[in-house]
Image (cartoon, rainbow, N blue to C red; front, top):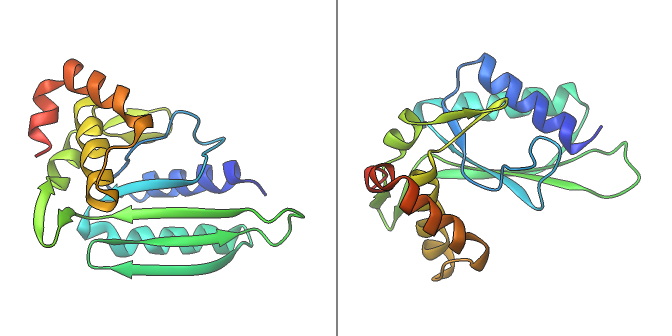
Length: 167
């Protein structure tokens, strides 16, 4: 079993269950590879179904859950495949809201409503991805990550309308 097999199965099941989601960023090499984790924005109404789909795929592929954390606005699922020799942990992050101390910063409903399909999964428009890549690191680290600066700039220029709509 590989990361690719897990994420491909997971995305296929999300799509077949009509779960509203976007992969926030760093999706360019999916489903074959990601450097760290996969970040999902999901509809609040789909939160339980999202977790159920993850559990079903994990069980079907005979993987193991290390930890599931949930909070008001989302959570994380850490899993691994006990059949492999190397220790490889897969982390799935999911959010239903993008807010700071109860103050909404980005409109999750609008981002999900305007999602676009890329291969076998959904992503935000380039302007909305720029807004996500700007705001989320600012919330958690107080600065914009260097690796996102160019895509934020490009997304704002190419898709100004959706950048603004995301707020």
